[in-house]
Each structure stands twice: as structure tokens, then as C-alpha cells.
Image 1 (cartoon, rainbow, N blue to C red):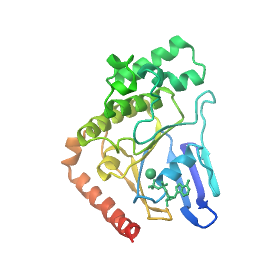
Image 2: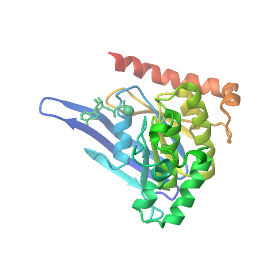
Image 3: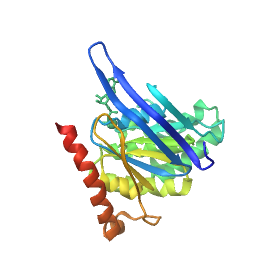
Image 4: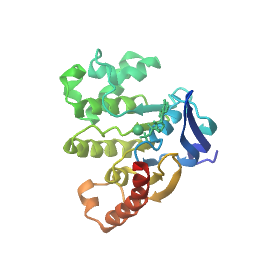
Length: 259
Ligand SMILES: Nc1ncnc2c1ncn2[C@@H]1O[C@H](COP(=O)(O)OP(=O)(O)O)[C@@H](O)[C@H]1O
Ligand SMILES: [Mg+2]
């Protein structure tokens, strides 16, 4: 791997086989993610986005090809994943949920409480540390998930449509919060979304995937200064231009996926 690379994906193919059928979910993916980059991935439903993320997370095995993830610190987890919807443990308090990854790594109680509390504060949840998930709204639970992923301090942060189930207002707030803590963390992030706005707002680059079998159709740079503000960004001509580009690429694929 090159020095500034965090992830390298080479000729990755994934085929789901069953007795009666074969689904080629991903076909020949080649991709390099830079260290500290926020990479957004968009593509039509069913094009293999989640499969790609699950392979990166080690939850699924590729059929062909290789994946390399640079581990700078062997005491840290390689990846942490934030999935769509709430994946918090209902029997644990908010603070315990956020501490979970640190506890698994046997970080001492005092230290893990300190780290978890700092991320809860960043997510505006410090007053809910001792609540149980069922006492929180959907948006708050998703903030717990984001805090938990950051607190576990992985080499790579993987997010699969984490805000997809939220209403628009909560989504806007969470996108802005995510951006704020991400900009302070420098963490390499792969973020899957079906929202073009979200991809532009968050990403350094946007990968557009084809309809099934998922391949890489295009990679676009997002040349918008950081820190970013959603409202301001949406009023700029660069945003409108990039939105149009991404949508034109995506539209063809969405139409194919409908056939
Ligand atoms: N465990 C599985 N077994 C069989 N087929 C699967 C499995 N997981 C995903 N697929 C198929 O692989 C394709 C890609 O799925 P997925 O990665 O979930 O797409 P996306 O996240 O882009 O909507 C779909 O056709 C889906 O039905
Ligand atoms: Mg998916």
C-alpha cells in the first residue's frame, strides 16, 4: 500500500450463490481510500453498497479480490460500523452503550467513562447518559450509535445509511454534528447514502456505483471548503453543478435498476 492510503480494494467481486440462483452483487471493484478521507458512496438500491461495507467490516467474505486496511495502531479495532436504524443494546444505559467497544478492549473503567462522556457531550447527550435507549427518540439513539463508533476509535469508520430512517430535520442536525466531530477527528470514513445532498455535504469524494452488478461508475471530487455549513453550501453554484453531475450519473443506473 502507498503511504497515504488507508484502504485499498483490488478486483473485488462478490457472488451470492444459492442452490437455484447466483447473484453477482459486486463486480471488479478497484478503489483506494486516502488516509483521513471522508468517502461517500451512492448507488441505486440493490447495487451492493451494503455488501461492500460488510466486506470492509469483515462481516462478509469476498468471492474474489483483495482488501487491505492499514492498521496504524494494533491496539485499536480496525473498523467500527454504524448501521441504519438503531443498533443500540436496549438493556444497556446510553453511557454503557457508548463504552461498549472500549470495555471489550479492556480499557480501564475510569478511562472509558471519560472517553464515552466526551463523545456524549459532543453529541449533545450528556444529560441522557443514564437513560435507557427506549427512553430516547430515534434521532437520539442514532446519536448514541455515532458516539459509540467514534468512542471505540477504530482505524476506519464505516457508515451504512446511518441517518436513512430519520426525519429530515433530525437528519440535518445529525449530519452537521457528524461533520463537526469528524472534522476534529481526521478519521478515515466510508459513508454510504442514497442522498446526493448528504454525499456532497459530507464527502471529500463521491463514488457513484452502477446498478447490479455493482461496479464503480465514477468518482467525483467535492471541492467545497471545510468546515461546511449545509445551508450555505446549498446556495453555492458549485453545489448545484455537482448535484447535477451526480444525479445524471445516478439516474441512468436507477432506471436500469427498475427494469
Ligand atoms: N446474504 C445474501 N444472500 C443473497 N443475496 C444477497 C445477500 N445480501 C445481499 N444480497 C443481494 O446482493 C445484492 C446487493 O445487496 P446490498 O448490498 O444490500 O445492496 P444495497 O445496499 O446497495 O441496496 C442484492 O441483489 C441483494 O439481494
Ligand atoms: Mg444497503
